[in-house]
Length: 106
Length: 211
Image (cartoon, rainbow over all chains, first blue to last red):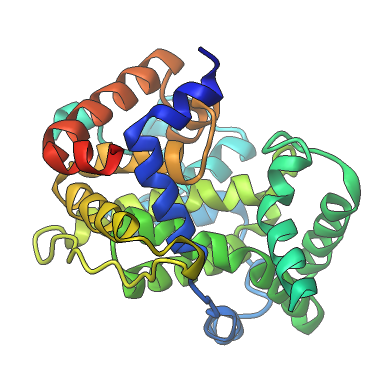
């Protein structure tokens, strides 16, 4: 049986098809809220941001609720971090990318 | 009216029809790339460009978050947060995936964090805030939607998450694995387990909806 046929006969798939149809009836307009929020955050924040090492250090300090010396982040990881890695670290700490607990640990 | 419907349908289907999440080509992708470039420049011009991106992506994003979180109000709050985070992180968007893929990933993380922060205070409230479309009104559809929302309410968040990614976002398992940072076999297993849980939870409702 093809995947399409199998999907068509799958009751779970059919139930979700109803949900998808229902979702498509929703009218969404959060754009004005987002625009106001974007205007509220410093418009040029991204361009006036401090060097990424400082951002990483400050954000990690804040997250750990303590002040870290400039090299502590690198030292803690026992390695010199390339700017990209620090950028990723900032993503993780600021929640753009988030470490997740494995579901089985919950 | 017909033109609006066609344009709405095209917008909803376009990312999949143009190579799914893999980068794709075509004028929509080019237009989006240009908007992202402009948004990166910041200032009023950048904000205006970003507003167009929000207009394009807000509907599916709120649908997606609502099916994960179970209520409209939380979905809109998290969607707003996702867009603001995306705006602030635009410089780190490398453009090797579609914008939709990138913000969906931010949304997956934010929804996960949101439910973790709120689960002590409120479970899914089970109020779908949805209407069954006029073209699909049979009692069966209403019952199915009601049963589905009730069933989803009782699943663990991770089970709900993978069911939504697979059945609402219609993502391939490979893409789900990538979005959740897990292996393909783990994604398969998680989906299988979620479907089993869902069958158990729904029980008779599932049998009725299948008739």
